[in-house]
Image (cartoon, rainbow, N blue to C red; front, side, top):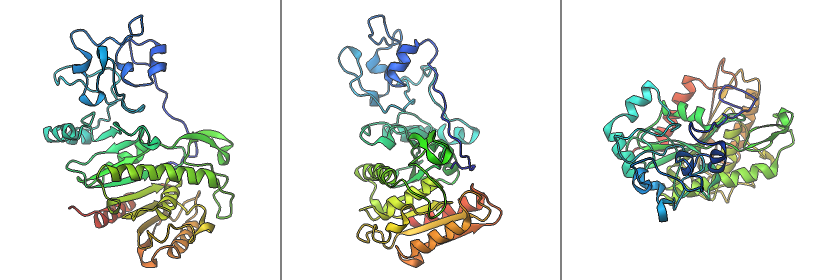
Length: 358
């Protein structure tokens, strides 16, 4: 369920860039070739007067005869010209607003992005680099820190939504040293919604505590999320500086993943959600590694999709899995299956407490 409580799915339709043949677009799907037209023989031709190896940012790389030696992620649109004075390619994805311009437009932000090897200057970035083996990072949206990143928050959206909506919400409460990663769920048929294909972390058969559950799908999605955690650990962020979080179905997956993780994480943010496969706990918890993990659970008192009493039952179950005093359960009068400013401030305070500046 999305941040606004939508049950419907629907992604944005990708259009070919102007001047490109549909075949060239379908073959490249937004990779390097989508920005460089194809000659009749199928050879990519750089713009006039601009050699391929020098025209693109270093992370794209180049090989023999100007052919790319390493492609960025399949979802990345953040190619930029190395020459600061050159025009940006048509179709370059930009997330611009007055607030973002004031942040990403500063020289310091651009220099820090370049030092990190980022492929764009906006605080909103698609993950790119050596992460093709991590499916959820292939096109995840990231809210980058304004300084050296020493912590990470991995936040999952709800059914039918995408990572973009929560990336924007988290940018309003972001800490300058924390990286926020918002992956997109795969598109699958959802039984609850008459088998409609939409972004969903796993299949849903019902929303009541005794409804059948997609055990195989939940465990597969959990393994994919654990791969993201391991990727961040390999990149230098210790597990005790990583928070998992999510809304609705995304919050449910975050709870299950954190409690079954082999790494001792900093905390969990669980918004308007439940604990999947709850009958398997506390036995399913990974050797009590996260016995003392901090959990912030928030719920709207007027939630028509996941009633607040289900949230209360989840909180009681969590207290049998982790140290009871580590579980916070906050409710918000009048709030439905959505979020509110008071809830977002509680999330910010929770993150600040668990991930202080170092």
